[in-house]
Image (cartoon, helix red, strand yellow):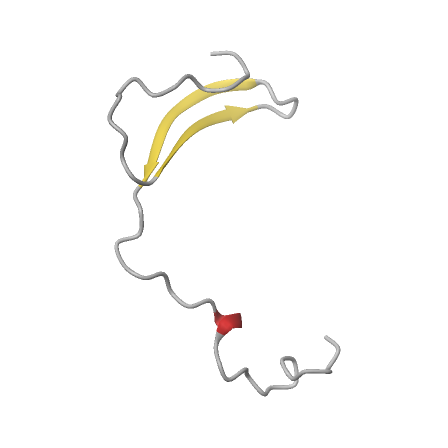
Length: 69
């Protein structure tokens, strides 16, 4: 396969999640090998809360409002 967009999947069945086509490239961007397709299934439950969205906010020196980092 040449360096370019991957062809559409052969199966007409649409599955939820993400399908990634994975290539190995050299430092010039030329595809050196096609390592296949990777399927990433959708999350089965709620996603974890990201630490910077916790409430109430942390009161340590680095997190207090108005304190330069």
